[in-house]
Image 1 (cartoon, helix red, strand yellow):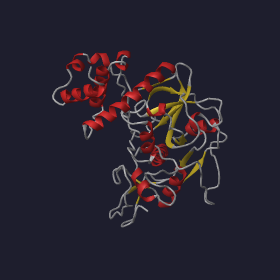
Image 2 (cartoon, rainbow, N blue to C red):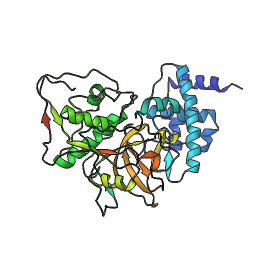
Image 3 (cartoon, rainbow, N blue to C red):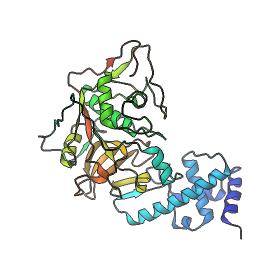
Image 4 (cartoon, one colour):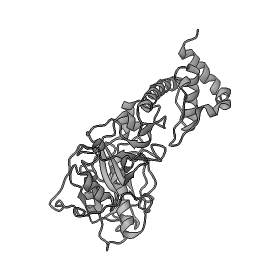
Length: 375
């Protein structure tokens, strides 16, 4: 009887010529669910042929390609291990689901090494930024808030294999407050922060949102994504020779530590930058529902809270915009459980929240001086 390796190599050779007839005729067997999940049946877990078919379907769905048949073999083995985890998790979980998303050919260690990027828990407040929390005395919060529906959230972006989550979290919060104050939703430049905000933040090697807010204030604003596009790697802080639009903020404030009530007060008024521990395996494959999976408080990922609510199953949640592209989670978002009874919140979401401020009298955009740099 041929071993699994020989079966795999033979099958791949056939697939380079023509799509597997079995897959074509039985596509309904792998019924594709929402949130970019490729479905599977119990038989797929026990059959080598079925597993290869499922892998090939997943490869085509996500446009994957590999440099060699050996590399494809390695990725199949990783895919198989991830499939087993997905199956086991979905058998146990009731409030959320995981699935075979575009990261299903990455080991968990590979994924963590390329998609996180928070530098510790430290905040830095200079004498120019005394602690204040403008929403401290707010009461009678709405039961549901979703800034996407109010036009204050840009499309989900993708940081790729660069640990720049801190820049995406910062930019999403600035985009939000700028729209709320001015009425204009403008996509802003994460790349500018990666290239130019280097006193503390470390580009693709991590950073903190508070430092990025400080940079934007000191810099006199942040440029648009169109003028300074994202390139998924660190570059040289660019010098511009023409006048360019910038979006300004007045400052920033921190949400009191470990206070979910205060976090909700802030979210009710604007999108908020938050840090979480996202290194759990279930986070990598999250596909929908109210996330209540295993995680701690070792903050390693910057995201943006853009709303909150309660599900039909009466699970309270916070709506979080991620930066792993629209194929991850619920079209790029995750609903994270709240009211957990822990001061730190789910995955530490209550520990390091902050938001930019913008005076009502501020202009929609400013203009950078000629021959200025992005420094």
